[in-house]
Length: 347
Ligand code: KG4
Ligand code: ZN
Image 1 (cartoon, helix red, strand yellow):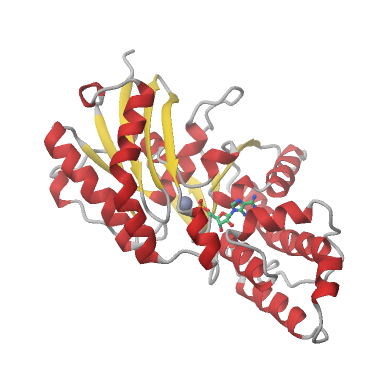
Image 2: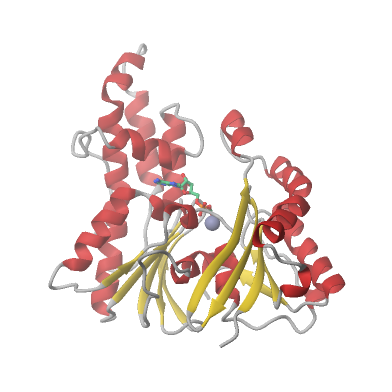
């Protein structure tokens, strides 16, 4: 079977990413994968400033796409289609990718496939690595990123049912906000999980809202408030106390975020009788979450295969967007594609 080749473009948040991805049979392979991030600026300002992110993306989008083609050794004529993240995300950022993709589709005469960023995250699981097998259907998918926490039942490549999600902050947002309270740089997830490795996750008693609720929803804003209160109630000169117990506090925060994610994902797999769990999104690169889900999947009463992309494919990238695009239809009129900042998995 001939390979199909797609150029993916992703600019939903602060990254500017382009990738060339090929599909042979049911195996999806990365040919090139370029990600330019404004992480240095975010660390300086403690987060993303939307207008600044979009301005940086405007500067990098063409060089990033050129680099993806060059590294692959491909010319535009070698592409079968272009795929672009349509939403959700920051409107200024999305517009950079969508309008560039529309222009390239027009001048290169290629079909243009709009992709949901959230669906794209899941499809990173279908990208071939050294030792993975493509996930099988039906499966339970947990998306945990900076803006989203969603639990989905995938019935096929294109059919899914939304089971639940966060009612307030996303899991990644909770990591980031707790880190900010502790004076750690953005993005906070990797910082907290690194410090947590040396800490005791039972040292601080932190809340796990909705842990026992009879649904597949999550809530993380109470945890952030509890951490803020804990710091506020310390004596005025509290820095030495925080420094002494920082690893313990980080381990306790990490555990409080992971516990409901693991519990409800495993519960969904049992209730819907699936034999496969997949996870995706920036927080899926968290080692503790990966290990705990994998351990639970091996339990006799769960007995599920577990799939998670390599860490560099969990955070935002364009290979995941191209990987999803193989299963979706191109737009009838590419010029009518509109960036949609509020695109959602729930319907
Ligand atoms: O998927 P992503 O790159 O961007 C969005 O679509 O939001 O996710 C970014 C989020 C950030 O909140 C970041 O703190 C979190 O993923 N993250 C982590 C880890 N690596 C990234 N959270 C916990 N542990 C990590 N190792
Ligand atoms: Zn993302």
